[in-house]
Amino acid sequence: MARASVVGTGMTDFGVYTKPIAELFADAALPAIDDAGIANDEIDAFYFGNVLGGATTNETHLAPQVASYIGLTPETSVQRYEDACATGSLALKHGVRAVETGDHDVVLVGGAEQCTPKGTGIETSEMTRIFGSGAHKQYEQAPGMTTASVFALHTQRHMHEYGTTEKHLAEVAVKNHYHGSMNSRAQFSEEKTVEEVLDSPIIASPFRLLDCCPFSDGASAVVIVSEDAAESYGVDPIDITGISHQANPVPVADQPNPPSTDMVRRAAQNVYEQADIGPNDVDVAEIHDCFTGAEILALEALGLFEDGQAGPATTEGRTRLDGEMPINPSGGLKAKGHPIGATGTAQIVELTEQLKGESGDRQVEDAKQAIAHNVGGMTATAVVTAMEARA
Amino acid sequence: MSKEFTREDVNDEQSTEALAEMDRLTHEKWEAALEDGSLVGLECEECEYVTATPNAACVHCGDRSVSPVRLPKQGSVYSKTTIEVAPEAQGSGYQIALVDVGDARVLGRITDGERVDIDDEVELSGPYEYDDDLAPLFEPI
Ligand SMILES: CC(C)(COP(=O)(O)OP(=O)(O)OC[C@H]1O[C@@H](n2cnc3c(N)ncnc32)[C@H](O)[C@@H]1OP(=O)(O)O)[C@@H](O)C(=O)NCCC(=O)NCCS
Ligand SMILES: [Zn+2]
Image (cartoon, rainbow over all chains, first blue to last red; front, side, top):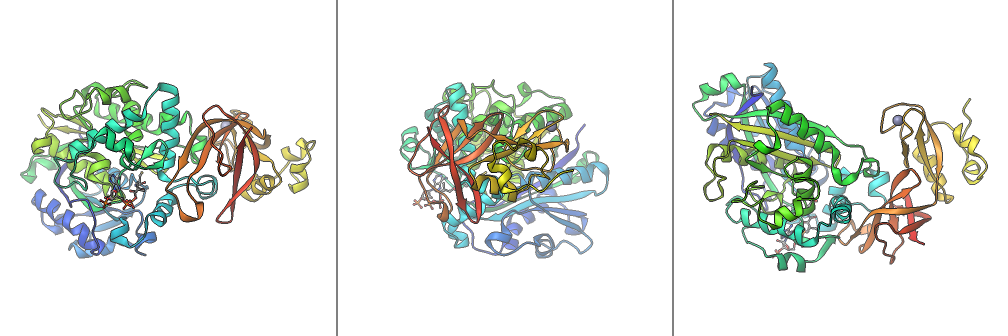
């Protein structure tokens, strides 16, 4: 039983944009609407994700503004969501519920974000401060925690407990840059070597520049409808068979066994139950690799590899496109880019194309079952989504 | 009856009773304690979880019967990272660490110029101030 079906997708290239955010979002939304073969007045609701507009461009009430620009009728129910880097997936969760319950028939879900220093005119250290707004002001920001450093704390402990090495981490970056080199929408198109990663400057140890996702601008969108209605759209629908959103305590000091990312474990278990699959059934996954260590933690929390095994598995090539468990064929956040409010639905765009067999050079063979993993804030929330191709 | 919690209470090592009877542990009281060289946390009467920072209820089980407890000033490093890219006012090349203090864990700043590793013993060396907030500062023993 599907909870909802994807009938249209669109996304911009990820990179640097200075245009107004509504124009940026239109470049993802209009192609998604066209892909679904629907007219604007058929869209009942619009679930929009944006995180930093208030801090970067002094824009907050974006849903009606963006809806107006892309020509949604005033009768459309519009809303904006925020869940730090899991924003797009949170919007998706609500869209799925709306079509599942019959509240709405056709829902446009998407996100747009502008956070490059070049696109916003905000320099790196100030953007780092703004990204830190997802952290607890008194008990995380005050001592000096940043987005990179929270994943660094988890990863350092993981290295201590399991023997994960900086080279394992570098292999994640090399693999995702390799995948990204086949994705014309990716921010970075060049392949990187382990040596290049290990020679790049430290951002928050053990992470170096090339262990980090970049600051990115971009947008993504999907059109979802109920499972039953999907056939009538004349396109190959891809089913969303499960979606689960779970939280972890804040501040990070109160999270149980930090490197476990416990909220991901709960979300994964919940999603596997909803979709009636297990980790062994997954053919391809888009993972929230904001930092290389985050991919290692995720592979284990999702049950795709045993605890402590994700580093060696990466080095052995098991997560490459031609490996047994291809991870981040899009290039991931690392190479494709991470315009934070747009990332969740961008993962869905990639997986929809993978499950339709439309991914060209980076197509995962015979992909039938997929999962997306999107983490928000200082490992404080996660959304895991399961998707399936129709037989 | 709970009584007003004062700075003297935190300073007075004997005043465990005063701590136990204090009103909800607010950030202001937590900071006042820190300023006077003391870390105060909360222990849950229901599940015994101990946290190192204020909450209105237990972060583990949700029960509201949480009582202030004084945490040890010495602890051991659970994890650490050295940060090079940070908000300008934080500087760069500093360490933060998750420090196990008794039954609780707290995120702290490491004294400038010092380097700690996992399992190293550290001691509270005062408050660190950023943007009008105080955070625990630790130094290696
Ligand atoms: C790592 C980081 C601090 C670099 O800052 P920045 O302002 O992008 O750095 P610069 O613009 O000085 O980049 C220096 C060079 O490295 C390249 N580069 C920047 N980030 C890169 C990355 N993540 N991967 C590969 N190359 C990168 C740039 O293209 C630039 O190359 P150029 O000089 O040839 O143009 C920043 O990208 C960052 O904080 N990333 C993490 C974002 C984040 O936390 N997201 C949320 C996670 S949940
Ligand atoms: Zn409790």
